[in-house]
Length: 67
Image (tube, rainbow, N blue to C red; front, side, top):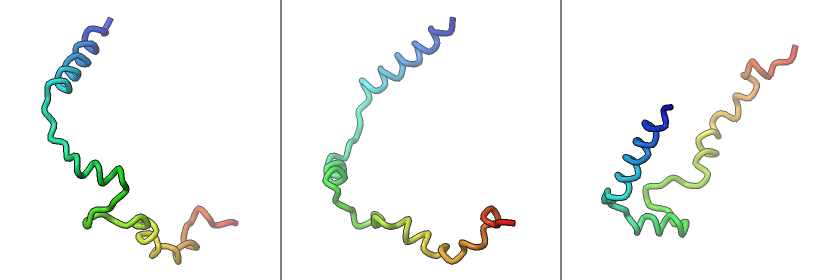
């Protein structure tokens, strides 16, 4: 029991995907697949740059204290 509701929902989603018109930006997709960066995108090392300021706080972590 319960299969009818799940199947109805799957059918609804399938119909919506089949008949919905999507505005796909193929130029942006092509740039992404090529690996080109947009002017507004972050650099590859944005995480390293973000966490660089926390490197001097390594001794402040209470979980690292050894008694």
